[in-house]
Length: 160
Image 1: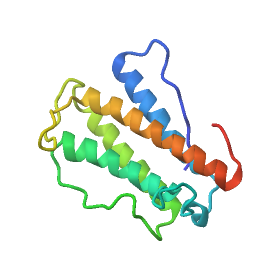
Image 2: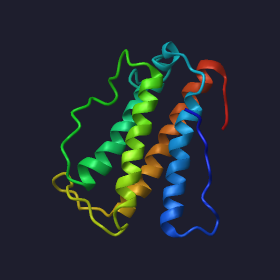
Image 3: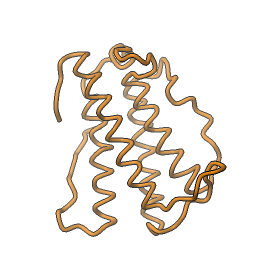
Image 4: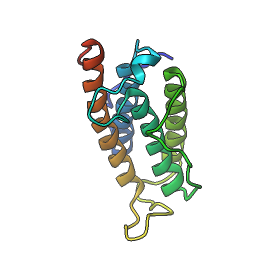
């Protein structure tokens, strides 16, 4: 799959701006993984042995599901142990992530940004779709920082 990153227009409305920046972060995940072997995707180079490229991509897929399908729509738990992935080729993990992002994108497009999620863990307030999209921008960008560090440790690749 070829990744095309497009920044939102500087005068975009709120929905287009939020969706555009989230899609930029999502597309950057694939950019950071470009050219890595499966062996490199499973290399543990940071203090946490679960923080691998493969683990991060799997976790980001799970985060997309958790917020958009489980919390927002009130669907079933995924049942995935998102960080503990093994033996799945990186290309499959990326394809699964892209497919989950497409489902998340469709859910967001079909609902008002002010709509509240259907479910929140006990003790936490219900949050709006706007809050969820902003959180996904933050969460994805934070983990892109991890991918940056791991990628540089693997082969010196920096930037993008």
